[in-house]
Each structure stands twice: as structure tokens, then as C-alpha cells.
Image 1 (cartoon, helix red, strand yellow):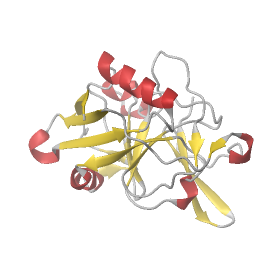
Image 2: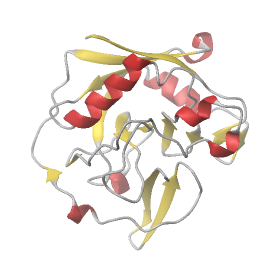
Image 3: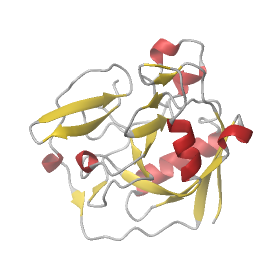
Image 4: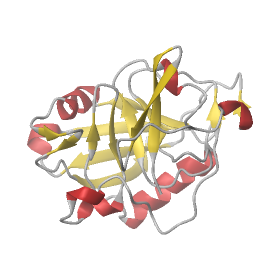
Length: 208
């Protein structure tokens, strides 16, 4: 299963940001999926706190979650965090648009499979909305099928119009965006994967 993001480079071309293989791929039109429109995000009573293994260098990232926009993806994210599925995963994909994590396979010693995995739970249906992908938005990575989100997630580094209406938005960074940018600048990299793993120690779900 390939998990990918799609970025519009020009009005006529699309480059796939795949979590598994760096390929260009056709995606199902967002028109084929329902898009929730005109609904303002309401932050949950709980937030997610991402703690890095090297906390001195990378600090923490706090994320508010939007159950009124994407209830299924928020529920999955909270479930996996509480079960410890995210403990030890890496930020396996870093480019000019996003930092991406959430692949259980990134815990192993084989970097070649980073970005190709998911949890043992069923995929999550698309919960597209008309919220905009500004800097700090948290989205669900997926494959070519709109309904193939699972465990992987990404944080946008800047405004990405090509992501709008195409990928489930389920949260936003409310504290630690400076740490997100520190992670995004790590070198050296092999392609989009940092050579030295940037591991998440734990994601806590705590009261706001």
C-alpha cells in the first residue's frame, strides 16, 4: 500500500509525494469524495503532544484536534497514540512541503521500507473538508484510494493549495512550530529521508 500526498506544481501537472516510492501517480478526483463545506474547526478538549527522543534538540509539538471535521481520523490518531503505536516511529519524509511520520515500519532497521507501512487496523474513510492547508496543518497521508488513510500523518510547512480538498485535515499545530521547522531543516538526507533517524518518543493525548 502506497501512502502519498499530492502537490500541484503547475496548473497542468501533479507530482506525487509518496510515502513509499517516489513515483508520479494518478489520484481519484476529489470530486468523487464528499467535501464538508462551511464548517469551522472546533478544537477537542484533548490535544496531542509529540515528544521527540532528542528532546533537547527538537522539543515538543502540540496539536489541537478537530473531531467535528474528521471524527474518524481523530479517533484513529488518538487510539494509536494511546496504544503506543507511534512510539519510536521516525519522521521518514521531509521536503519543502511537509514533514511526515506515523509508519510503524520506520521503527525497524530497514530504511528501504520506511513510508510503506500502516497499522493493523482498517483504513479510514476520507473526511475531506474545505479547510485550507496553511502552515502547521496536520493531515492524513493516504494512497491513491481516497479511503486509504490509516496511521501516517504529515504537518505542512507552508501554504499548499494543491492539498486542499484532497487530504483529510484533522488538526493543527498550536505550539512548537519552531520545532517542526527545526526538524524540516535536518541534514544530511537520502532523498527525503534523514540519514540519522528522527524518532518520536511518544505521543500523549492530554487535556487541553
